[in-house]
Length: 428
Image 1: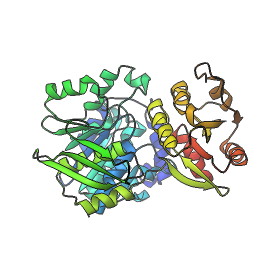
Image 2 (image 1 turned 60 degrees about the vertical axis):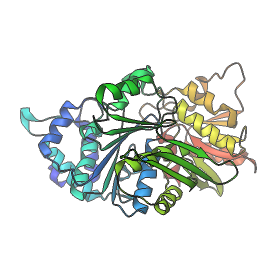
Image 3 (image 1 turned 180 degrees about the vertical axis):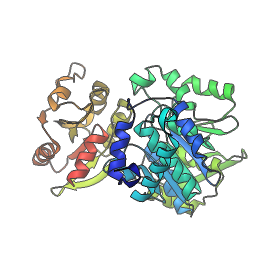
Image 4 (image 1 turned 90 degrees about the vertical axis):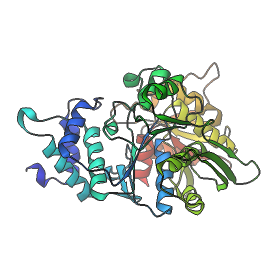
């Protein structure tokens, strides 16, 4: 069978085996294929979104607001939870198989033949496919989530009209290192001279500001160029910032989103810089409608409510713990937890420990996965003894055990990785 006859599953299998390494940072190869494709992206405003955490939720917030305002959108995110099509959404709907197949065919041709053929990784091909679909569908706004780092990520072959950094923390140490100043420079590498970079990190490294002076991009920093406040005694919040003409913009009594307020504030600054008008009604509607799979997602298993969250590093775990504590769930969570072995397991568990009534460790039988016993053995939270815990070989036994033990005033939460959450969604 020649590849022109492949279905989507066959294309994805080919992509996985196409390149010798899964992660191969650098723009030379993917940039050359992109140049060969000669794609015209001029019809769309491009927003590139980097960060350690919050990329998916910021993308979802922007997408929901722009759709509410009547614009067309394409959103590219990764990874997916169930099906690859989740990675590209057109007007909020997962892309069809035939759109992805058409994109993969064009990329395969542009990769060339013989000695001139260029090898691309799974992620690089997927990124080029999303960019190809921007050129084909010409959405008003294209929201492109950066996969890893920034400067050397495949998304950075495109010049963004507005670049975004959501949050910053130490993660992906094998590729980005453990120097937060260097990580800041890498992520800020998606910004372009004379164009805005919106940074939602509350404690940004000095390297981002230094690079803005060096490279000449316009920096909009939370707490400086834009601010937000939640109103303690009402379910509203306020925001102030500036638009592209440096004019002050203020929103009062906004609807509270179900997604993190910090990311909502960043999204509003982006909207005011992109230059597409969104009235207050559209903003409010988008804030209320925005959802992201696997982010404080409410589902039910055996008539018992569950919360799903893909928190997989200490920063995201800390946010999850604070969110649950604010709901009165300190020491009242039955936590079904599976974490990949290359993550900071100790940091994740230390962040989550204040909310846990019972740990339900679950084995992840995937690449980079670890057993429940390995995860349990990696934990030592100070000198305090580990809370009640149990180990489970798979998700169905872990959830069943949690359902059997959870009290009426307690909550079952599933967290630790995209893999862990996707296993629950598959069960449901």
